[in-house]
Length: 139
Image: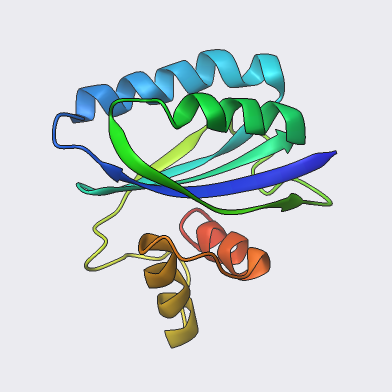
């Protein structure tokens, strides 16, 4: 079943930009083999990743991600079935953000900012709002 997964974690200080590049390179190489797509938002202190694909594949990937030593305290925010992919052609898109002053590509409401803040705090929320908000970083 086609599903999505969103998690947040704390980026550790030893996770340099070079390490981020390694993560993205590995995603480009490996995700296509499992038909996984998605995006990674990252700041100096946080990761928010949106992954989509067959449920069993994304859960296996998340289990592997949880053991990665470049971050800590991964928190699953949401994982539910979806009708279609939000990022069908991206093995892993990415964007660095300053969580203190987020630059969205489209206008955001106060509610969007509250949703984003709750995601950063590791508080599960509405699947629909979280997906829509992540899309605003890229579309």
